[in-house]
Image (tube, rainbow, N blue to C red; front, top):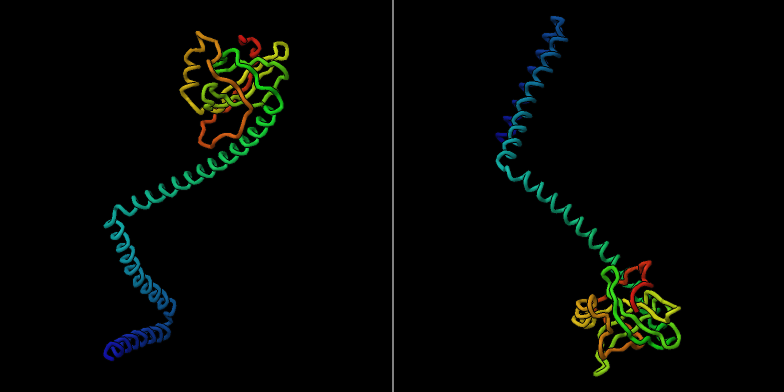
Length: 233
């Protein structure tokens, strides 16, 4: 109750003083001066309060110098997360597209291989750093994109798979590139000796292609070079 009375009398005295000043200014014909004085009082009353508030805010910011650093760090981390998310979306899209293309290639390769007798391996070669298996066709010549499975003749283990990338109609031969390395050391051995020993791998043969195991290492075929016909058969 005491606080209410204090505020009441403070406002009453202030308003009475303003009214008295106005009436006195009107009697002396100084009304414009009254308004200038009132405006000046308002400005002088507001500036200290605003300045104090600004000073308090500045003091708080200065008291926490790491605040701006934290904000900058959070912005940087947010941007990094956005970039990672975009990269993950792109990788997922590319992976899906690659899976679709590989599935199509497997179907086509299997169908084409079933239409002909598998070629007989007669040698290996290398062009532009790519290992090639040379096959001789005893009857029908397979088309490009036909795939064949490479297996061991002794126990029938799968070594991998190859895809026809070049067809020589005159010599009735095909050049095939490895696209599945089921047993990597088998293919590594061929790459190591191809420069001095072009003979075909011993005790292996080609059979019709079947769908690949998702865990098998897939190697994308490279484009056929223009001088592929000059590779020794």
